[in-house]
Length: 148
Image 1 (tube, rainbow, N blue to C red):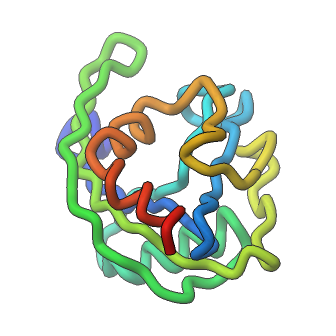
Image 2 (cartoon, one colour):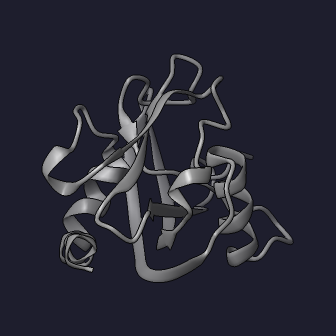
């Protein structure tokens, strides 16, 4: 049985920012599970026995090599996709996370070709399906980062 395929998978997704209007995106490498070459924000599956907050902290440390300073719950999304002809269903729990920009690095170079900072005005393309969906749902909250 595989989460997301045989039953609903639960994932924690996050947009890490520096508090000054910039946020981190990663470009998925050829070794990434899916959507290689697309830009994404970050996330990971919730495993049995782990808390949502624990998963959030663990994934950010694993992907970007830094700690969470603070976070804001954005909401949740049902994510339906086709993956190689199979239907998937994930429940995404979404966060906006403040991190120290000086400590961010590509901690998973086998999964990410590049990790870089962007603003809403400088978004790269192409974007990961899930990140595009997040942008649509939380655009106003993300844009407020530019005004802080």
